Structures are given as C-alpha cells and as structure tokens.
Image (cartoon, rainbow, N blue to C red):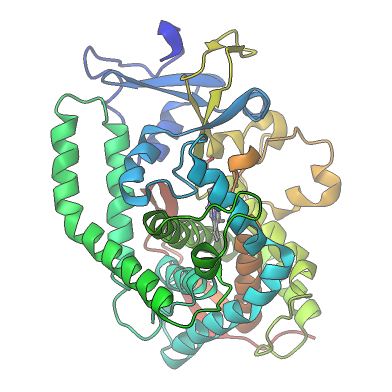
Length: 463
Ligand code: HEM
C-alpha cells in the first residue's frame, strides 16, 4: 500500500504496534481528529501493518473527487461490513454487477415524484412519535427517539413494514443487532492487521451470530411473505422482487435482495437520525438560530402548531434546511469515505497513488478547513449556507453525502425527511436542554450524540 511513501504521522510511534497507542477503539474518528492536529493536509496512522492515509484539506478532497481519476474504495471497515450487508449498494465493489443492477433498478424510487408518495408516510410516523411525547411529558432521549422515527420511516416507505417502534418499550430487536454489526465492522476494520486479528474477528462473529441469524430470518420472512402474497406494491422491495432491468432483463437474486433491504434499513436511518439529533443539539445551544428557525416555521406553516406541512411547503423551509446543512458540516454523520485512483496519479502533495492504494477523506476536518470555512469554522452558523455566501466556495469542500457515482442515493430522502421532522418539532415545541449537558458523541461507523436530552413543551406559535 502506497509503496513505502512517507506521510506525517502523530508523535509516539512504536515498533510493531505503530500508532495504535492513542487510538481510541471506541471512538476512532474523534481520536484521529485530535491526532491530526498540526500534521497538514495528508497524514497516516499505522496500526500494526495497516496504513491508513487520511486527507483533511478541501483542496485534496477536491482532487480525490475527480471521477475521471478516482473511484470509491472500500475501507477495511466496509470490507468487514460485507459479512453483514454483502453486495448491497453501500458495500459492493465498483465492478460487481449487482451494484449497477441495483443502482439502475432503484434510482426511480428516489426521484422527486417518489418523495411525494413518501411524504404522507413520513408525516404519519412523525405524528405517532409526537403522540407518545404528548402522552408522556418529561425529558426525551433525542437520539433514541430520532432513531425510532427514522427506522420506522424507512421501513414503512421502502418495505411497507411496520416495526411498531412507538408502541414498544425497548427498541425493535433489529436496532441492537444493527449496532452490534456496525461496531464489529468498526473494530474489525481498525484492527484488521493485528496479530491474532483473524481469531478476534471469529470471536466477534461468534458473539454476533445470534444477531445475524435474527436479522437474516426477519428479512427472509419479509421476502417470502411478499412473494407469497398478491403483491403489486411498488415500494423498494416490490421493485426488487418484480422488476427486471429495463435493458438487460436481469433481476436481483433473493440473497442480494436481503442484503439490499438490510443496507437500506441501516443506511436509510442511522445517519438521518444522527443529523436530526445534532441539529437539535446546536439549536438548543443557539437561541438566535432557534428563534430564526421558529419564526420561519411559523411564517411558512401558519399559527396552528398541529398543522402538517404539505409536500410543497418543505422546500420553502430554507432556514431549517440551512440548520441541517450546518449540522452535517460540523458532524457529518457518515464521517469518512474512501477513494482509490483508477490509474497511477500524482497528488499535488507529490505523493504517487497507484491502483489499489486508498485514502480516507476525513469529512469533519475537510468541513472545518479554515481556507474555506474561515477561522470560526468550529462555530455553528447556518447562514454559511446562504446562497450568496456559498457562491465561489471551493467545490467539494462540503461532501456529507459522499461523491461521484457512489454518492448517497438517499440524499433527497434524508433531507426531505429531516427538514419535515425538524420543522414540525420546532413548530410544536419549545426545546429546553439540560444546561449541564456537554456534547458527547458515540461512534459505530456513524456518529450520534449520546445522553442528549431535551424537554419539549408545547408552544403557541407567534403571529
Ligand atoms: C451512500 C451519507 C441518508 C442510502 C452514502 C455515502 C455517504 C452517505 C457519505 C457514500 C459512502 C461511500 O462513499 O463509501 C448519508 C448521510 C445521510 C444518508 C449523511 C443522512 C443525513 C441515506 C438514506 C438512504 C441512504 C436516507 C436510503 C433511503 C445510501 C446508499 C448508499 C449511500 C444505498 C450507497 C450508494 C452506492 O454506493 O450506490 N450515504 N446518507 N442514505 N447511502 Fe446515504
């Protein structure tokens, strides 16, 4: 990997283990961010024999975004996730035919017209969550409740499957199974080259076997039930079960369909619930931004806090959208993606990248690059995304949804849902944070605030 080329690395490298000491296995992203300080736009961490090269400047991120020269690379963590998600869209290699087939088949499910169909389903799920809050006043665990909501939304819209998230006390068993799989991917990915890592991986797999078996059964039953029924449903599952590729006539097989469902259930909710939770955290700490957001929802949606936004009103909630854009700038909930060159390419730093070499774009640092975002890059300021201020900004300085043909297929879905839910929450409730709370972020490949509670009191919207 990288033919022995040298990169800056944090101080304290040791023989054999390399830069392992100082890496926090429970929070690798945050420890890497801390250790990146002063190392410049490209640096490496060596964990045993595995070299991780990270890119942190907007300029280098832009170089790697050139699709004619670079493509998606699967980091060791994503390779480890393939045990769970196989050749699903997220974890497929670029040249696997299942990727192009599923991508072509499913793209129509993510058009603006498709969003119009999902809108009432999104509203109904949000309504159920609000009902549970209204029935039981008191502080709410924001990340947990946002996760219930986004899981329910993706499962109902994509698979017409109700997970009953709002009526059960504990989260649906799918959630702990998914978290275990993501954590295992993160751990196996970080320690892949450690002596004895194969044994460790087997131990993790054994410990997770019952989760894996549970998820496989859940999804296989779902597929079998839909095959057995009189199914003319055109949700994502319906498309995968019944539509051949329009040009080649090829179809996805049942194992791949299971991997795609799993991929959409995970990719379709984890990151969106994190984005909503971070946005709520920032708003609860920024009275001026909160006031501006509430003034906007009152203006667009009117005085009745119970009214549900129409599909057409969602894009009018521009400030709410800027709040989410800014939340995803500071804490992009899918915080890194890998890039590999299609042919030997020299970076502006002079490093030569050959096919098979890969680098990780470390989004929270690219998104705080002072050359683009200024000296106050750590501050929450939604107005950075005012059209006037974004003009002329270095392209690719902001990539929360990845880049190129492997970028996020669910971007519109996530943004529609998140704007809708955040606007409704701001319309209905005042947010009261616990003044003693300091933001803590848990990592399971994705980022999520932990221990973050808000007390939501019904509000009377202004004129
Ligand atoms: C891919 C972020 C929501 C489905 C990606 C990638 C990123 C990302 C960074 C590229 C990963 C890479 O290059 O390795 C996000 C964020 C979201 C979000 C921040 C929410 C705020 C969603 C939703 C869905 C979804 C709602 C589905 C409904 C996918 C899929 C891929 C993907 C299937 C793989 C695409 C491919 O390679 O063809 N996402 N995502 N995501 N996302 Fe999202």
